[in-house]
Image (cartoon, rainbow, N blue to C red; front, side, top):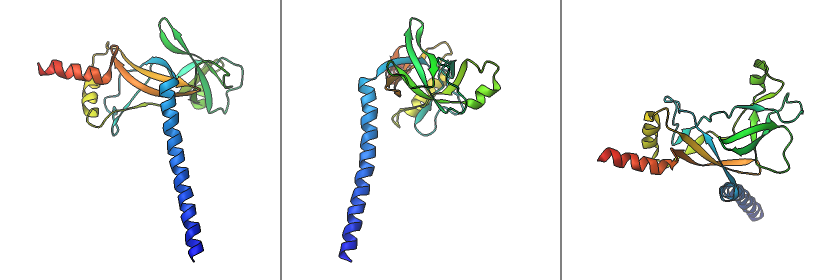
Length: 196
């Protein structure tokens, strides 16, 4: 009986260690991307006023980040993953092309391919339809309602960008920027102006 309890205790300890290891690995990868990844700025479309927040995060939609030309001749049928090749240009950061084979070097991002959308379009031979693997920007609980009000009331001509850190095909949303100012700082300035 004692031997069985001892084995169960060892098994329980092992399971706890594995779970802590998985959590630790996730945190380490996230922090590594934030520290070592290259920064790209993507324009954010106006937020949906009816579904801007679920809990304490902002739902983002990225401008010009749902289709791109195919950069290789690998058949895209029945493919669920592809690699978006990123580039910096004078007009801003963008997705240059899509590839179905993993690039050896350069900055790229693993994305989810939508084969059903491609089948409905007429230009399926050279266009890949995809979605980015993230669409949420998390905020502290006390800042989320304020950010929601500000982002819903903002002028359509106000530039909102998301800065992404990209490393080895993975990306993390680093911050939201309104007219070149981080969201939290912009919120602080907005509240100070309103209180005067």
